[in-house]
Image (cartoon, rainbow, N blue to C red; front, side, top):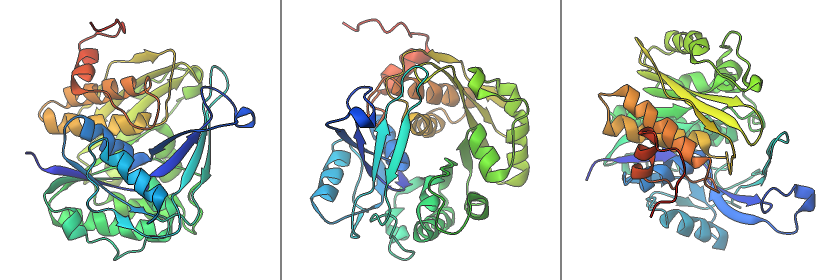
Length: 345
């Protein structure tokens, strides 16, 4: 068995009105669980990669239900802490056509938000692993979460693991006293691989792609050469910098691609037109999960690794919930050009 991947962050209860109902129309909510790093873990588990998710859950029935949900997808839960007051919640209103989706957070004083440095035995949690993944959501949640994350990345580098980060800027979360630009640089200094988009680079590091306009529904990869080159200058230890390229025509129709920069060359993936979006939440996480799988499976072929990530995340947009439950065979079929959606008999 190959060595495992460890991801670290908050998992939440997701409450969503059925279909495309607005919050004001809802008399019931569909329930799943999700969160950036948990979503990555689910993708990897589905691709048959050994993976553990580290978090903190309340020691009550809702925490138990969340644990059961993740185990059902093959995610390792042996290093999950129990304690604190509650599971964080987020409400999702699915957008359609010209009405965008909307997220409302209810995660104050969650079990994860009240985590503190020293609570996690990182030596044990990272034992048998060769990869550690976190996102910019985690240090945004609280001072304690930021400090625990810093412990994790330091221990991961000490143990020789590959460390990856999805920058994932969330303006609504940075409320505990420091801005993203004050916290993220130290954490990113321990990373080998960073994933982001046009907003992450601009809002966190002040690096803006020239002449980019995602609202026009078209994103040109070459516009981001400046962004990846500037990130590499700022963080020279980064071996690979990846940018997701989402062009938003409407809430139901996006173009989707990505680029990878290895310090010398830029690789660009094919562009997919996602014309009837089912659920875009977790799209970036499914890209990251696909990228980690691709870099481990096709490490000597960055183009193929990138193409796998884009195809995997393209498929995620057809799947309800935070988790991407596409298989490797399905992703590779998309990579080969099978995009007609014909019935498999």
